[in-house]
Amino acid sequence: MGTTRGPGRGRARDAYRRVIGLTGPLLPCVSFLGRLPTATIQFGSVLLVARTHGSLTTAGPTGGVPALGEVVCGPLVGRLADRHGQRPVVLAFSLVNAVAVAVLVTGAPAGLPGPALVPLGAVAGATVPLVGPLARARLVALARRSGASEATVGAALSFESTLDELSFVLGPALVGLAAVLTHPAYAMAAAAALAATCGTAFALQPTSHATPPARPATPAPAPLALTAPGPVPGRARDYAPRARAGHPAGRPGPAPRLTPATRAWRAASGRLGRARRTDASPAGVADTRPLQGAARPTPRAVAAPSGCGPAG
Image (cartoon, rainbow, N blue to C red; front, side):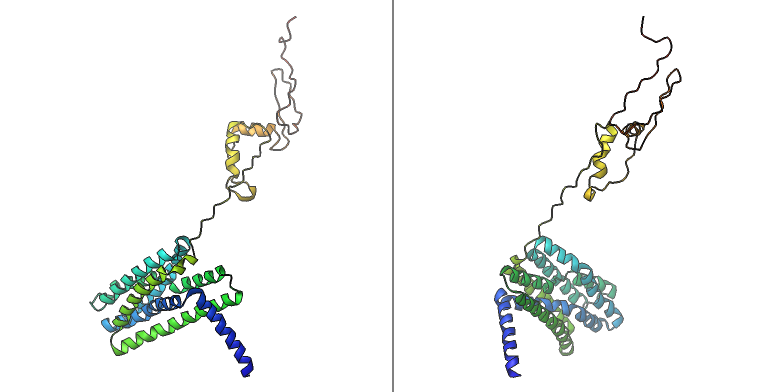
């Protein structure tokens, strides 16, 4: 069995060595420390408010809203990072998150009421810079850019998942240890310091250029379909392009509003089916022959009234 485990472990070490070679040893350390505030804020808020206010009823909402804020605003942070790049987004959210956590840490021991602490907890959760997901996207982009194999990309994802799990296990443990030995406020203050320093370092890393801002896709012009076979009167010519513009694959839009002149023209050109037209002359002669869909009405002879023949 030793002969089977040795090559497997050697391949795993080589794969992780290649992953570290893509980023250097500094980026994994910075990204790991930058993830700790995310795991610390929620549990630390509960212990902090429970210690300062002596009530879990007050501490519960304060510790729950950071998770809610992160869930609601997490997709927005990712969207902004895709549109503007990781560097400005992570830098801004790291500093705002550090300030929000610092205000929460100073407000709870100062005796702020519970309803005032809940919005502070929500802001602290909504401004989490999401170092973990962005570090994963950056590492995969670096692996793709260097032409690494799929095995290396899989090792990179495994490495990032391991860092995530370690941060979510170690963060609450450090908060609990601080609560037992000293005060939960010290753990929360350390979380604010890590968010400011390690978040800034992660944003300013040269590898942040591995995920450039995404260029907005320019939509293709919508096809225009004109249905009139020939010259069209004014109102019909106006609605023909607009009725189909903006509809993919030339599908017609909402039915246009036809004027009496347009109805008469379309009836004469056969667009509304076989039409019958009766032209009553002063002598009462009627022409009931059907039109055959010609572009223009066929001229027909109409009986002239009596007394209007050609002059002798």
